[in-house]
Image (cartoon, rainbow, N blue to C red; front, top):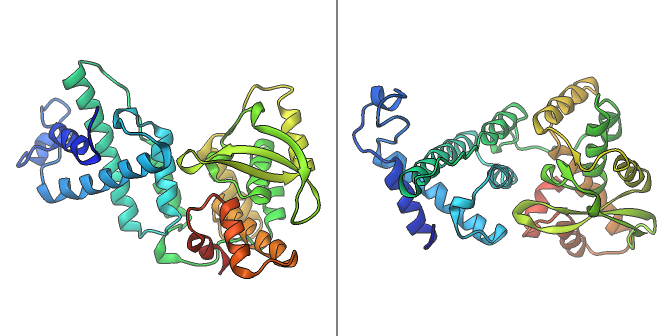
Length: 305
């Protein structure tokens, strides 16, 4: 698919918008209007979200052909939106819009190219459900750092989840940075200029395809390195990881904040380390923002309340 964001979204709208189609038709798998959008207002709302998503993909992933969208991009976009603490209603609307985008892309591939392409954006519902369950939305804004992150990590039942949580807590990685790690991402060790301690270097690709270093304790780095003697990739199931974190938080008598809470712990600890090293507040904030792969320092401010 070629053309501007708005042109491509207009082509997809044509696949799924059937003004005036009845609900009984839209819920009947045997009807030609199955899963269509009947309301102009609803379609306009969905298309606005599509356009925002497409512009995000252009800026962060360098994607200009939106037929190339995958579940990885959908998950990254949902996580990106959650960082800005949307309302429950708006996050649900984003999820619904992405669900309709999946249908529109399938129809476009079938009707224009004659190809049955299997788009699967179901990860959006997993992320939405967890955001609701763990209250990662604006209606419940609060400090999400865990009071005792080390104990929480120790309470995790799965060894791989424990290792993923250590990487997030120590290095500030997002969930996509630990969900899949390959051996070549391990880049050896160095002395952290801020703490003067030896740390392991893991290069991760996170939101928007941004590549950067995640610095972890030597023990954590060695554990991950040893893992690759037996496996070709380090991979965890996102939903199982969320569930394990939730039960671990309950054992610690803490509110479950998913893996995002560990990034809050990282931000607050790292700000203290930079301050102790003699950096002024704004410089601390800028450096921690860089390590967290934030586009703006103002985002990192949310983590410091």
